[in-house]
Length: 289
Length: 146
Image (cartoon, rainbow over all chains, first blue to last red; front, side, top):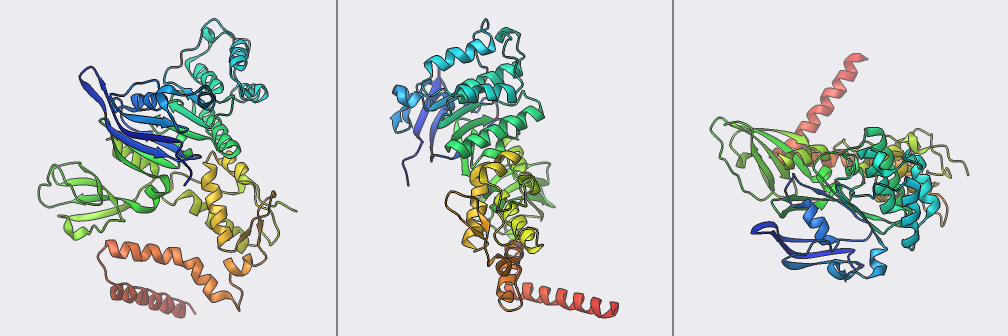
């Protein structure tokens, strides 16, 4: 196997005395796309920032392109693109002006491509950043992050504010970059946003820990949802191999997320079971509840 | 070489529980079986399908590669993938080579039945009995129609 693009090992991060990340480890191979799923406050942004060397963990290491994230070389930085949750763009620049500025210091800038993206995203080039809507600013920040066709693009809840049509154009553009430059993407999300279409891997971050990381195809192939109806009160918690989630929906009913690669049998559970296939949407919803 | 099928020809739905690469594989096989794709015909590029459907190109590539290993598609250096000469026999099953090939097409469905039977706690004999009953029922239904 080629060396991983991202290598995070036993990362711990605290804000004051509050643990934000507890012992997070993950690896991602070049060309892969990871969807980081978690609720608000799960630690997604902190993890992405540590991954990029913008956050300093208390313990553990984050490596990118085989370099330590906290001391990335100029060359490594030029292979990266990042769109933070709320892009902070200089308000007085026009869209064209900002593209020109970034084109000057970004060594691999593709000016033609950036202008093609302006057209595609229907951004007014003459307008000042301060006069753009929030969604337009997000799109501009995205162009600035991909105009040099990076090998790794990191998006922190990026497209949630866009309308469905624009979202689809953005996701299709990213798919093209995946095809053309083998670009990897790491994105965080707490809503379904179409970006899931691009994910080869999914990771669920809960309370500062990776609860599950798997291939996106595994979700559809191996996971099932069980609706359990019992004739007695169900326990509050249920820990068993192969039971990924257990959520009581009332005193005697519960929803379970099952990994069928484990040998879990219906008769081990009290009550009758209806089984359903699991799509990505079910998966995300089940994990976010 | 002709490219009779555009990327939009495929219907790929990420919300379906069936993995996208399997959806695509099944649709290519069906297009071949229906004669819409013939030996030598070009498939749309991975990039074109990925962009048209906003899907990870690795997923499309995985479907094409699996179809290649099944002998349905041919990889051509620096050019589009094409439908293999043997694809029709592989996917549809001509009289001679047919039964094995057609059974191969049925295998995923049978695997699903077995997997669900296992989850239901049914043993092999019970599954075979159920299948036999179903076959007999279908057969007698046809007889009474005739």
